[in-house]
Length: 211
Image 1 (tube, rainbow, N blue to C red):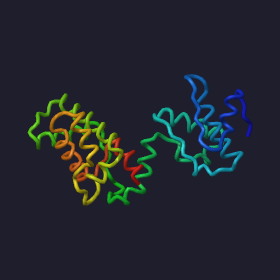
Image 2 (image 1 turned 120 degrees about the vertical axis):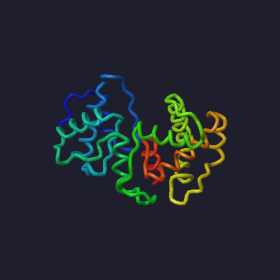
Image 3 (image 1 turned 90 degrees about the vertical axis):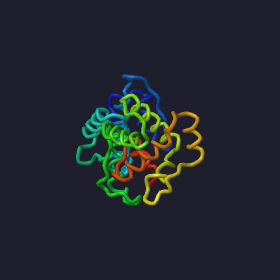
Image 4 (image 1 turned 60 degrees about the vertical axis):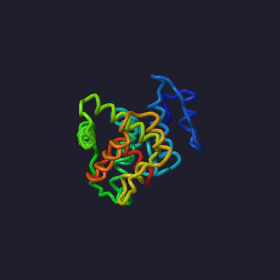
């Protein structure tokens, strides 16, 4: 393949294929072009099967742009399905592998409104007002807790037969950083998630890492 329109540093990045490579570049510096050429170089020159390459980005727009550029370089019939956003990859992976955790591949994905509805149920259970600001505050705390626990909440609450008790370090974090009754509402919300076989966007990543 021809590597046209690349400067020396970009060429270096395209051909650096051994070990971990970290490239830092500013806006408009040609990052997408370099990544597309790097993908094509790995496929056309090194002979790697596109099915063994995972190419992740943060937004659907960026993923579509990446896919289009790669398709033009190597041909659409050769491009991998795994040029996608992080969450899209996790969904594809979990549809195939989540059965290992006792969930069906038809598990639900909770959007923002779904999450609010479940949290409102949990708040009502604990006699806490269900104002919009209260719901948003609890949801914000929940995502912080899930991130801090590094996935331990899955074994604690979301798997079949889970003990429904969080680890001591996460419990201490909740007591130190969250509002009153957060733990009780957190537990109730996770129990409902398990009942409905549903995952939020944070769970998509955590479940993938857990498996």
